[in-house]
Image (cartoon, rainbow, N blue to C red; front, top):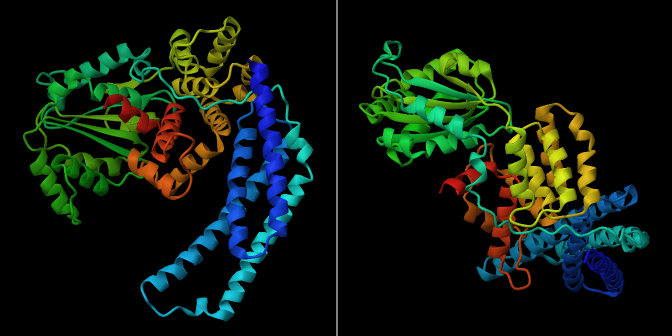
Length: 484
């Protein structure tokens, strides 16, 4: 079976190199900007497929890596040329449609400039392509033992993995939140703060989400539950306004902070509320004091649940006696988590099982590392590749650096199309809440996602999104999908 896949991959590459050669010859023989642009669009599609095929192979040598970089730069240049041409054509059509005077740009003189510029771009593209095709033997002779790593649709339950090894901690925090405070005189007239503290990748937000959606917590805080992602920017005024919007279930147009505080006091008065402040970094007690003062108007028993990486944050927020230090998962729990993502419901090869145990041991009980590596390795059963993961130098890094290195590794193995879609997310601010359907529509409108074979663009976009979620690139999206 593996031999057949390798042969198919090799035939694919030979065919694509032949297609590139053919298109290169056609581009040189053609006259007319419009006809050349049509061929450039074909060329862009073929190059993307070649890049995706090379990028998805478990291992490639330095010569191929160098060629891959050149192909990627060529793909970027192609995209720029096509976009530039399409925009100018659209502007011309639009000006004619609305019967407006055609701008000076579309005069005969400027048409010459436009054609000259596009012609220069096309010439640069063909020269780059010629340079790459001189090394066509490298493309055609890529290791035939490499098996293409397929982007498989995950079918295992998303509900099961999140609570692995965290049930006792969940129950403990639920009890802290729902505990009757009537006997706690020190808490009179104040809102109580409970903190979950731990390094990145341990699952602080995951645990908080499970607690937030526990039936006991829902019943205890039936009046009001709120969730606010804070992040690095701790602005008391903005957080107050966000909390007010959460209580009102609509946007708030008030800008004066005194009015916001007054409305917040009215909204919270007499209600026992739970407010989760996720991912807090602020270590300035004065800034926290301003926010806390606005949140002490709720009914007795109101709680604030904080997730943070910093012990200092929990101290300045007054949760010294109610701080839970999140620990790494046990070896067995981490292995169970890894195997769900790496194997799903499939039969497990004994050799791969042994390698997986050694990989998990190096994960150091960090769930995010186990999830990311399991998802990455799910697409291949090549034992040599699994062994290369085990022997990687990233395991020499410190824990938090190790998590980032694992995520980078997982990113490198993504198909090119998925990389583009993920990179598009960098246009949004940190902690921005993305709507899945809207994001997929943006991918489609920007040309990152197209229909493929019998699948429409929306279906392809959903598959890419789900894979990014399962690889932990859209971690908050994953949590929302789990808890819907």
